[in-house]
Length: 298
Image (cartoon, rainbow, N blue to C red; front, side, top):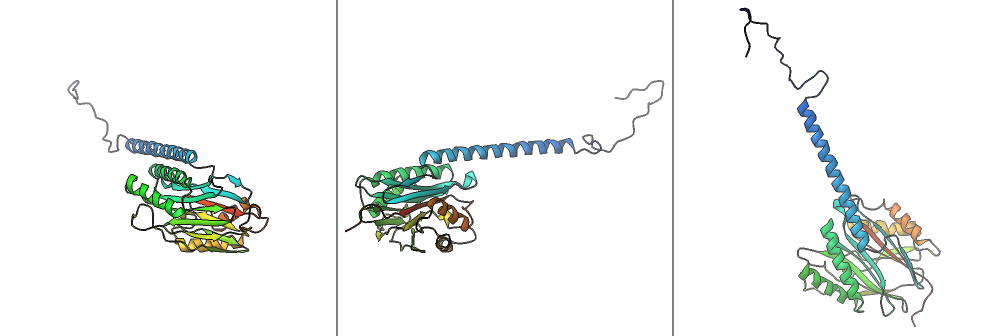
């Protein structure tokens, strides 16, 4: 209310059409508040993403063998390259295994569970541990995948996975293997390389009516066997077939598998030659270099 003193009305201040929240050279207070809230939310999301990635990687490291570890045996040298995807949301269920069996053979496996994030990693852990346990029975790779497929169908709803697994017998140098919708291994021999012909085998979790076939190849001293997940060969700009061809060419060009070559350095050169790991998916590469030592087949 405006009072009247001495019969005259006091002069009012001039009207100001400016926004009361505005000062010269400054943004509206409301805008500043929105920007501040937006900045805090972005920072919180970033912190959550960093923490999720840390937890996810820690879980993977607890489940999988040391990804940079090498295994030296009298008859072979085994090396692994595992590179996680660049984002936590892209981390997937890729896995590998290399374990001696009670009968003296070596069990080798690589697999990939569909999906990404913690659910895929949890399912990966179940499949990896189940397959490793089943392998101790000494059953053939086709039977192992049949049992693993039953597990997926009955215990892991709406889950699919691919895998390739096999036995390497040092006494005969025979590699016997099977696959479930997974890229076949690549054999590097005497300066050349080729992908092995795959036996029949459908994706795990697809159906229980189709059997898993078995194939074998006799390895020679100096041979190199590459088992890998699709993150190594697949990109948005190319399909798996083109990626496999690129790996085959790079294996030859980089001298991978040549006599006396450093296996670890060779795998690093191979990854570099194909443009590095896939930033949108996990990359897993298991390499087995056969030496000239150990028992020979009759």
